[in-house]
Image (cartoon, rainbow, N blue to C red; front, side, top):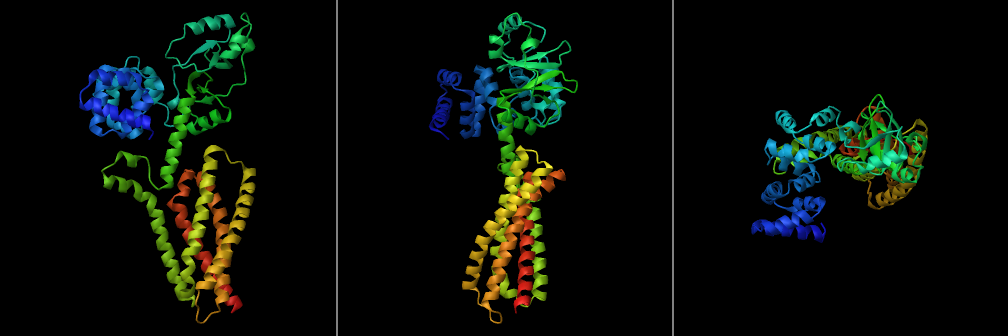
Amino acid sequence: MNSKILLLAESIRKFLRRNMVPNLKNLINKAHPSDIAAAIEILKPFNREKLFKFMIEHNIEKAAEVLIELEEHLIKSILDLFDDETTAAILKLLSTDDAVAILDYIDDEEKKEKILQLIHDSEKVEEQLLYQDETAGRIMTTDFFSLNHNLTVKEAIEKLHQLEEKAEMVFYLYLVDDNQRLTGVMSLRQLLLSNPDAKLKEVMQKDIISVRVDTDQEEVARLVSQYDLLAIPVVDHDGKLVGIITVDDVIDIIKEEAAEDIYRLAGTSEEEILYKGHPFKIAKIRLPWLLPAFAGTFVVASLLDLISVKFSYFAIFVVFMPMINAAAGNIGIQSSTIMARELAVNEMEGSIWKEVFSTQFRVGVIIGILYALIAFTFSFILAKPVHLPKLIVSISVGIAMFIAIIISSVYGSFLPIFLKKMGVDPAVATGPFVAASNDILGTIIYFSVAYNIVHLLQ
């Protein structure tokens, strides 16, 4: 947290405690909404409540701007402070996409319906709520600016002078036909440099990058990033322009998806933040993610029990099993994390699979050779077999390490691809599931190699 935010939070606390209304009002008016939101993060709950009540009374516009900048768990807690009328008054000040985002945080459908009834001209909001979560239709703003492509450049410039402040034009001018179908786009610079008497359809760019209302938000973010766009138009199934998604919304998507992946890597979810002080609810969230790893330990234990009966030198080799499993598990998690990230930002074509396999195999070979030498040396120094040559133990450990590393590297890369084909989020593959499966694989590989080498060389 930077010093500017800390100072702002401390000033808010002091002004609230001393009831210094003019000072606090002046501070709120001057501070940027995102800075106030960051300061609220470090305020205690009772100060957050007092601050929002103050802003609603003295500057409700700033309260609305701050609310949309907050994290999800804080938005939900703040909304609990408001009655339906106050929430509706705040939503009226927001753009359609921001109003929809706030309404999504309200779980009570009856309360949501009452708020919608209180919002003037709520048809746009209600219509946008019909789109599926995490699609372009759900996150787009309908407050955009478009022009008929039959207008001249001069007429278009005159229209721009009449532009409503709420419309999110960004730097692009979207052009439509008489049926509101998107036909072209042009930048403001291009507009200003064009012949004033030329029609827009004569100078517009016809190769349009757009998305449909049902396009996944991750695909939207990918397109905006790939083509360096400041905004992207959204069309319905008939090609009609229904909204735009601006780059600030895309940044929010990227942050949201990244946070979601990080939580899944840890075997939990963002909901955990909402349940601070509720350990049973947090445990309920974590348990489903931990069960695969827990089940994996039972499988490994069963395998060890079976191997101990079949393999007379089990006690000598089991000492080095954690080293094999840890190394294989780590390389597997690295490979699956990289692949899950690759799948999140790019579509994997069939021709890339061969390249992926080749790359991960070679990486596994390089790391496997290094780890095998270390494992060989380590086991040769520590092993003290009574009825078995020390060299056989060390060779077994080294070869097992080499094979386990290669297989885990390749397996870790293809597991996310397999899960995606099965309709499962690849981010899940980098959690406890891959750790459990690598433990099982490592155990099987290690003792299979040891058993065969012992019987081959003895």
